[in-house]
Length: 218
Ligand SMILES: C[S@@+](CC[C@H](N)C(=O)[O-])C[C@H]1O[C@@H](n2cnc3c(N)ncnc32)[C@H](O)[C@@H]1O
Image (cartoon, rainbow, N blue to C red; front, side, top):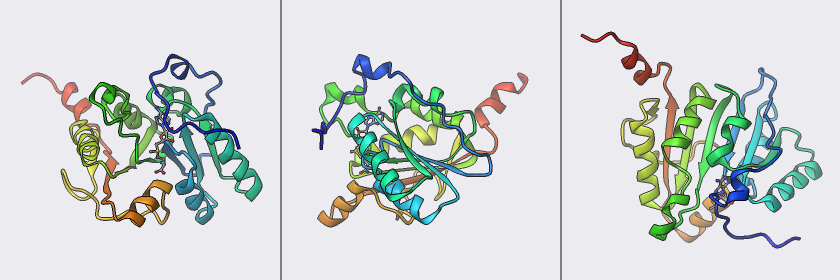
């Protein structure tokens, strides 16, 4: 097993220009679910085992993990799940067509605790805008983290984007993970009794900002 780095800086120049990022094409009859920062993809593998009709894609910036996940899928005959080596901060336009993804999952994004490293955090206006572009109207975005500050930041981005509605009412956390699958980090937190903050948002059927901008001046 090759050595797997614990963390990589997504702003490192070679990771801003990954070659051969694939275009994800899925039979339109199938729903597409995507985990951003999937690591070992335990969450997606569990979902894929339960739902053989949908397609599951993990996006991961650590190449060794991508290869390990794809080898595991080949070994276990799971043809509806794959991991791709890409940087979610810059590569979503290359990966996904407009309105092609049914669910996005962001399970435990890297916290980058030191303030000088905060710029490496992945959830911000750019990522939320790209998710809004790539997701189908009515599609879901699920975020979970054990870092309260990160959960609040993600909530603020989604609440103020004008493109998503909180499934449980504005500025409200979800009590549970309703997806019948757990990520590796989620299991670890649960085993250690660490609280987890979860949010679920749904892409609006109408983009309120675009509608407001197109209204004539009073
Ligand atoms: C804390 S781990 C969580 C892994 C998994 N989702 C879980 O819940 O167990 C965060 C993962 O996101 C990946 N990651 C961080 N920044 C990324 C980026 N810009 N693009 C793709 N993956 C990224 C990391 O390499 C790491 O595997």
